Image 1 (cartoon, rainbow over the protein chains, first blue to last red):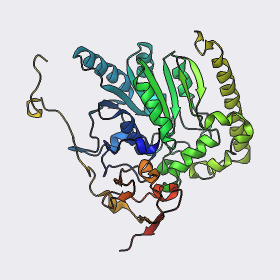
Image 2: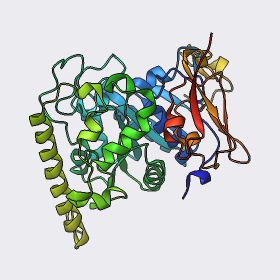
Image 3: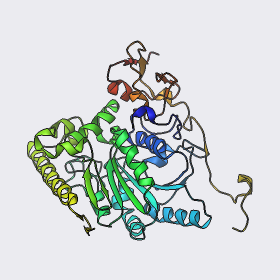
Image 4: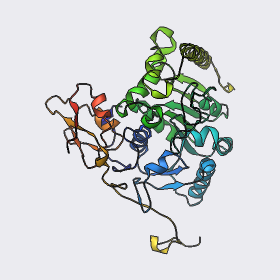
Length: 307
Length: 94
């Protein structure tokens, strides 16, 4: 598929309230281009509630329900059950939540829905902090990043949420980034056709919180992938597979130095050379793990055991 | 609920927003730099269209971009991503 084959229809209407250069807005447009308008979105407190605009107008031309922070997956489960009861098949239910609403506050409801195999797509758009309330640290904030609650840089590492979801043995887990639109659209379309809980984690750069120039949003997403800090992969029926361009980055020499990504952002200004060395070491460790997962998945066994 | 509702008016009091272009007004007024397209350089790759966070770039029938200055916030992603540098950012005057 190419970019030109994507639909010209827009279901995120212009004139919405997102900041200039907003990464999640690009992801939302791609979501509708992949799934069309036969979707019901469930959105907890996150930046998307801001993008919606103020009552009585909204920038979303699809049905969307706002729900409490911790209840995204629970509300989506209810909508899935109601659609089944009324025999309204063909409508995709999408839980669309930020990283705070997923890795910290919403993880309990999400874990429950995944365990019940509720048929819906859950998308976590990760801007690595609570952006909507002015950048407080979340469980997804990376090591060393400035936020308003970690003024000298966070001292803990980012949670590996996609692998937490893979441990639920759900049929589809993927990571993506709107800087690679075709990869993201393909993953959404694949997820739509699989029955059960699907989890997609996307990295969406945020110029306001990450402290960089608004024009660099797409470039930063691309750099995050090229430096290996963010890997594009999918775990389909327990088989781990790296997607292009990440599949070529298993070789350490092909990865760009992480400094290229870090120095573009004001939130990493406090990092010392030691910190950068430490982060690079963790990246290399992660890739060693991805390499092992890839080679394990090519044999008859999967992440969940023998097939 | 026993019977299905015929219109929104029959619904109990519900906070329900209607979709509209410009839900936050003319967001083009946020802009300090405006993107200008040089159509002679443009290769119709549609990359600016897919990456515009505000859906302010319309893909015309010949795949060339048309920028809606009423809603373009001037983030500059289109100019940064254009592979042939056909989009330049000019400072807004006045």
